[in-house]
Structures are given as C-alpha cells and as structure tokens.
Length: 141
Image 1 (cartoon, rainbow, N blue to C red):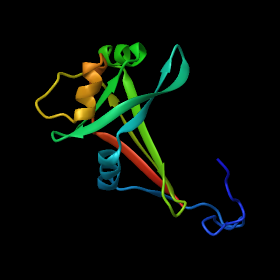
Image 2 (cartoon, rainbow, N blue to C red):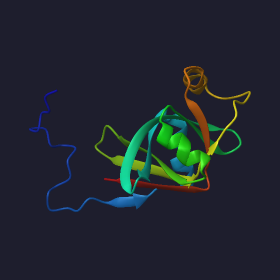
Image 3 (spheres, rainbow, N blue to C red):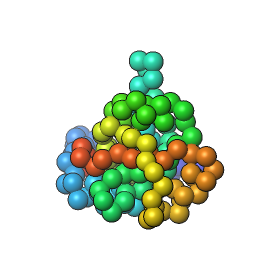
Image 4 (cartoon, rainbow, N blue to C red):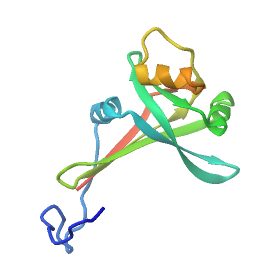
C-alpha cells in the first residue's frame, strides 16, 4: 500500500494541537452497534494483551462477544474485569475510540443474537456477556 503524503488537506496544521472531545453515551452505543469486531484488553500474568473478538449489542443492554481464546473465557469464568475496545478512522481524518469495561460472564445462546455470533459459537467459540454500564469514548480531530 502506498500512501500519498503530498495531499495534506485532511491533516491538522503542525502548530495546532489535536482536539480531543468526549463522546456521549448514545454516540458510543451507536458506534458499538455498527461494529462487528473488537479487541479485549486485559492483563495475563501481569502483562497487557489485546485479543480480537466478534461483538454485538443485544436489546437488553448487554454486549455479547465470542472468543476461542482460553484466556478470555477463563477471565470471564473467574469474574475478572475485561475491557472491550473499538476504534475507527473517518474519511475526514477524525479518529475515535470506544471502550466498554466490566465483569464479563459466560452467556447462554439466546433466541435473538446476530448470525455472526451464532456462526462463531457453532464453530466452538465461547459466548460471553458484558454489561454496558461503563462506556467511554473519545473523538480526536
């Protein structure tokens, strides 16, 4: 991939600091609703790790995620805190990040879950649930 650095129309001038603003809860939820993939951020044996997962929000206000990673399922089974993070880059150069933190728990297959998560669980992935109580988001422009 070649990046054309000669077009700097979307870049902030060097002498202007980047502006960071907090995202409202509803904006964070909307970004989460549109996301299919995320990363779980936690520590394993005192070292930070970021591991990919599939995600979906369900109607009762929980974030469901699937993982084949034994460390993630073990953390959820033990009632440890996990952080699930998504981020993105808009066409205008604005970046954003949303993080959901909480105690994940193993979840049961439910009547209404997205097909992508059903597919993952059929392939052996564990289904986990995370409450949407602690959500933070930022926008950087």
